[in-house]
Image (cartoon, rainbow, N blue to C red; front, side, top):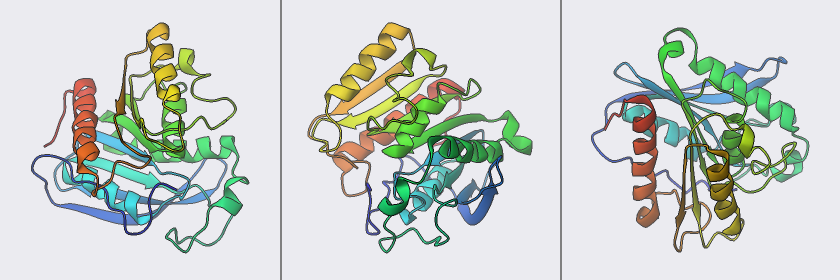
Length: 251
């Protein structure tokens, strides 16, 4: 997992507005009910983001991150991954995902991510630009979905490992349909720096619009309030990427 209960998402640059969040349950196409957290800006949103957590699932960090997005004018929803395999719904330091992670199948994860996207696209959401933002395992999902969902405005992933979800995202590069922003650290003990370097090369060869950022000295999980030397620039790049692909940028 990237974050414990003490970790907090960094604050985005610029002014923030009031936002509200709500616990909710989404239903995937196969009937699975999954925990989610939606955050809504006070003013009408023009952009929306689906947040895919790390392997810890819907921990407090990701609920707070959804609120950070809503505070700068984005609709946001973050989801959990374990509704099919464990009844316990609290995802905090008391929850060990490892016994359950191996029970989660790639096709189930994809159905759950689609439930998040379908939720965002209800009603007025059908008119908004939609982005995915994923972390570690969620970053993998974000990149792979960019190979399958041509209606996305773009896919953002942080420190995504080479997890095999019926192939890695390096295997799917030629299928990627949407712009990609990937952010990694060269001091990551989980992911070799050669992974983002190869990803960058393959995206270039495939002609996919992309930006791959490798922060010098950054460890795994660097998008965190206590690491502003990386997180501040990462937030700016996220918002610049979203702005460039929607023409809308709050903050």
